[in-house]
Image (cartoon, rainbow, N blue to C red):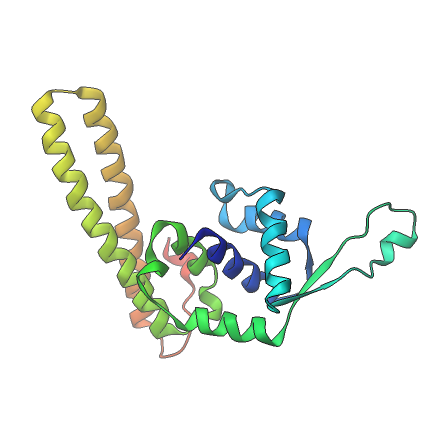
Length: 192
């Protein structure tokens, strides 16, 4: 999934709750997905414009604040029926892109709107991908140790510990998902 598609998915998910201005979308993306997902207006507004052009969202520039002396109107974006369908299709999918680094956090932030079977496939896929990564890091550690490079070894070890922690977290989430009554959305916040 391309970065613009991930951003579109995040926007669709936010607008499913309520219409928002571009500034509100950017602020919520940062708050919900963390500072590592910081994005510029130079990325956001072209994406919004493309989504309007594709009929996924509608732009309403009838801002009552403009009449009160504000020089710029604020455009509110809302989900269209096509946008609702696209969001439903995306949330029902669980292909490899949904558990990769660039996409997983956005997909996870939309888990309350995702069915249990799809959530489980995404969590298991993410866990599988990270297990592969652990093997890759361990292979890298063995090569670095042969060179006796203490700093690179420490960096590799730090990366390994971080991935292992995420796998432990995923194991708890998977267990919670499997033990929840069918179709229910377990409280994942208590799993961490």
